Image (tube, rainbow, N blue to C red):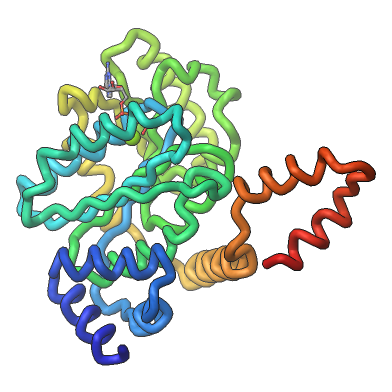
Length: 306
Ligand SMILES: Nc1nc2c(ncn2[C@@H]2O[C@H](COP(=O)(O)OP(=O)(O)OP(=O)(O)O)[C@@H](O)[C@H]2O)c(=O)[nH]1
Ligand SMILES: [Mg+2]
């Protein structure tokens, strides 16, 4: 086993997409050898990890697609990790993503992997940290991670990506107060997508005022207007990302804080292993019909079965 995993990692580091896909599957499904693979990862080569988050339908996939065009034109190698919300209500969008990204499925410089959220809290796959670290070991220039901004995921994605793009759209309301505080804190770059719509200008202006007020002694967070469907503003967005990385000096303090956050999440996932929310819901439904249902006895019994 040991030699096989070593060989797999060597192939991933040499740029084999097949090996990378295998490595991800290994980690995603806890298959034998996954622990060894994770513990053998090294961080000598560092692709730039860019997270794109934002409300459903904000145009995140369209932005990913446009950035892929922009970067592959320049000869960059890019990996895309798209986290599909597993809710059945999103199947339409899921199909949309697949069709859109189909342009790149046969491109040697683009690796695409979709992951399910699997009922995890927020919009992320429970293995996203580990999977991203596996992809970080492959020779990409950029890794793009698309996640829907719901609940915890904004904060999780901030720990995952080196640069977090928050995509907003005019429909989200141009009232800045309505934008959740959490999302404000994590943005390294704001995108006002669907700038072809009338309300975009006022959302843009309000965001500019807000980032100006927040900047204090730090430099202002860039706000970029895009029409992702028409490739408008995409080179400006790419410039903003490149310039972010040019000025990116990860302080040791921030790095340690993020590592602690990641480790905390890994421990949480480890402790929650095997506990499935749907299975829990079914058990509760069953137990609730019995007389004298007691949540605490139920929980105690439920935990003992794991
Ligand atoms: N008018 C306009 N429509 C856009 C723009 N960008 C994306 N769209 C459309 O908005 C819809 C949603 O785009 P997606 O890229 O799938 O959005 P998403 O944020 O990835 O959606 P989820 O993954 O479902 O959260 C699609 O019909 C796009 O064609 C834009 O700049 N202008
Ligand atoms: Mg999408």
